[in-house]
View 1 (tube, helix red, strand yellow):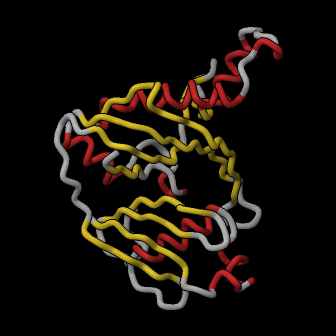
View 2 (cartoon, rainbow, N blue to C red; view 1 turned 90 degrees about the horizontal axis):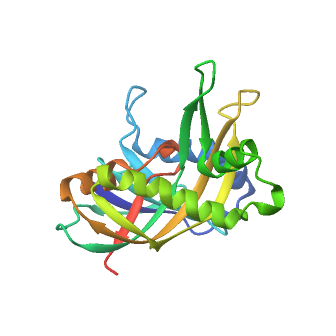
View 3 (tube, helix red, strand yellow; view 1 turned 45 degrees about the vertical axis):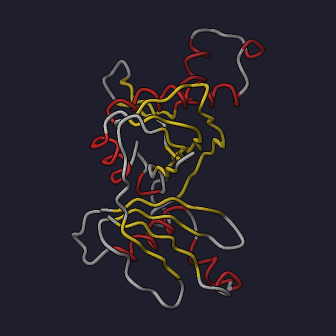
Length: 226
């Protein structure tokens, strides 16, 4: 596996054409994909995470192959990625995730809601008055941490609620092409401390990502010694 830091070259951010071309989240996905794709049938074998917004976008990538060189736009630093871990290690982590819940309605149709909207719909259905509902920050923290906790064991780690912060809830909408049906996802930013329980499962999570939305910059977990 490889870990890459991908920045745009100095001066490119001053180009209006660049900002028009980078467009929305789907166009960013396409630009990152172009760095790794070697044919139309290639399956996605990389994760990426956006480091910042402006003045210049920058990305972290974890991939099975090294990215292709692109001298006009991107400056890339790539190194082998093989974390040395053992059970019981405590690591600081960062994760941009798309936490959703899937439920079927009375007609058997599957619906996906992000955990924040799912909680709001549940409170509304239960008749909880608006003034009695927790504020959004509390809902984001509670429901997002629960979502991550439910996925921790199968990904080889454990977490304590008091050691995790979940915030930065955002809703995104973009189209694959003009006039097409919009794609909507929500993201939450996690930071905190985790403990490694199963090294093989945890490495798989680092390499393959956590949760849905990986095509749009979700799922890549960054870890470091606290």
